[in-house]
Amino acid sequence: MIIKPGELLASIDKPADLRKLKEEQLLQVCQELRQYIIDVVSIHGGHFGASLGVVELTTALHYVFNTPYDQLVWDVGHQAYGHKILTGRRDNFHTNRKYGGLSGFPKRKESEYDAFGVGHSSTSISAALGMAVASQYKGENNRQHIAVIGDGAMTGGMAFEALNHGGVANANLLVVLNDNCMSIDPNVGALKEYLTDITTSRTYNKMRDEVWNILGKISKFGPDARHIVAKIEAGVKAAILKQSNLFEGLNFRYFGPIDGHDIHHLTAVLKDLKHIPGPKILHCLTTKGKGFALAEKDQTKWHAPGLFDKITGEIYKVQYDKPQAPKYQDVFGHTLVELAEQNEKIMGVTPAMPSGCSLNIMMKAMPDRAFDVGIAEQHAVTFSAGLATQGLVPFCNIYSTFMQRAYDQVLHDVCLQNLHVVFCLDRAGFAGADGPTHHGAYDIAYMRCIPNMVVAAPMNEQELRNLMYTASQEGAGPFTIRYPRGEGVMPNWRTPLELLKIGKGRTIQEGEEVAILTFGHIGNYAVDVCQKLSYEGLTPGHYDMRFAKPLDEELLHHIFTKYDKVITVEDGCLQGGFGSAVLEFMVDYGYTAKVKRLGIPDRIFEHGSQLQLQREAGYDPDAIEQAVRELMDVSVKIKF
Image 1: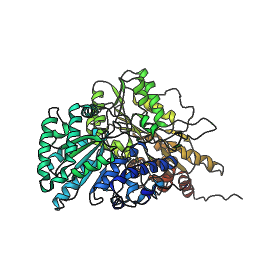
Image 2: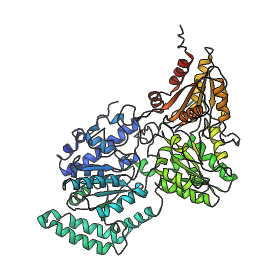
Image 3: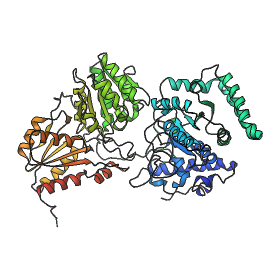
Image 4: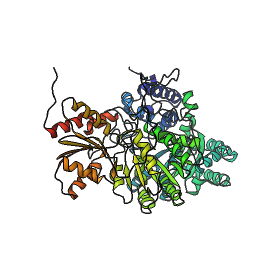
């Protein structure tokens, strides 16, 4: 289905085209841009509410600043759909997040207008500051550098580190704070309360109106404009600092808050800010999902709703003719509540992803025992370590890709002290349409090299429940459980909890000639492959190892004694991963089997469905079958 943009939007192939329009036409551009986002996302899917909320801001930024020479950095990136459409990707926007299509996030190799690749939050200020200092060093003093950061991303410690540096660097940096009280879930913490205080303060609102009325006249003062701005600024500080301002305290000139949906006011303000040197922050108030009533009302649900009817708002759901398996994240959420009801020491922790990881189930049932700490993975880990020192058992749920941000804390604050923290790594393996910034490819390798850490992965929902139960037992120590995004394989998943022996795998089937060793959910592919091969009289052995650390050495001795051909399969990087652990065992004990490792090769994989990416990486069901046939030296039987 071809989706046609509005008349003005159709004429904009690059921001220079936008800048040719009259300012009074910008309102129509915003209306057409918002409608185009609704039209495309409703049919093709993707993130939704965040980009709707910054339509006016996006348009104003590209209208006022000379992008790409002026460098625009988006934080996280799911708010950048309008940016992509205005920067030459309108006609390809329907391929967004699809295999071989546009990335769902800004990406340097995709467009010169994407100044910095993003996917994880709180990086924009650091990156833009680096660019600003570089421009200063090269004598490009007229170049502008803008970081657009959401109030949720501002809770990340890295944002404050950048503000702390930016306040003394005196480089040409503008931070635009997109304040909508949301990341994916509602924002939490003292910063949210602080921003709320600013936006409701009579002093700030009075000064906002007066200051922008004056600033709007600056251009009339010619060469004396900078002197006048300095006087205005001094007056603003004198009034505003009666109520302490965090940003002013960090040496950023603070402007706002202003209406982030008033395109004409935004444009006027940004034009004036271009002529104010040094670090400054513009506080914009926006509504996530602006222009689509249901998205404004339920912002979490409409963050990334899938396909929907843009008229009625009905979100399309796949209809099944039989019971379906639940998502792993939901099994985690319900099982954690079940365990917490039995064990009063169990707590839940997540960095700003309660709905994404389903900790919201525990937050609703036991609000005093489940914590959303904001976009702060490092803090989440060390906070969990602090809980553990007092005899509690925190389940710290962090997406695999985001856990990379807290690696030092895992090593030093948890494992070095051998504290009982259970890390549940959601979205392990290929994350799908979110692409390389969200793939959980590396956790097996980076967790198994740390002393005291247990590394486990369930093959199904029952195994996840049992691993969580086992990890909660006294003396379990640091414990990692990784599982993928999406559904499991067991519709009837509420099985009795069973205590597992740490470091013990299980035999799925004994076989001949070739042994398949799998780690985690990917083992279900091997089950299907073995069943298919059995129709030809081929019976490879299949073993669900459960643990990458400690390995089940007793089972491995059995396997390497019986088989001289071994295949390892994992949904993680091959370098240093589960297959590497098996090879280390083999060498340590002098076995000489032929081993073929299947997993994620040493390169970056883009976005697509999980199966598409697994096929590209070479560990989908067909690849597993082919590996077995090659080692057994048999070809595919052709049926007539």
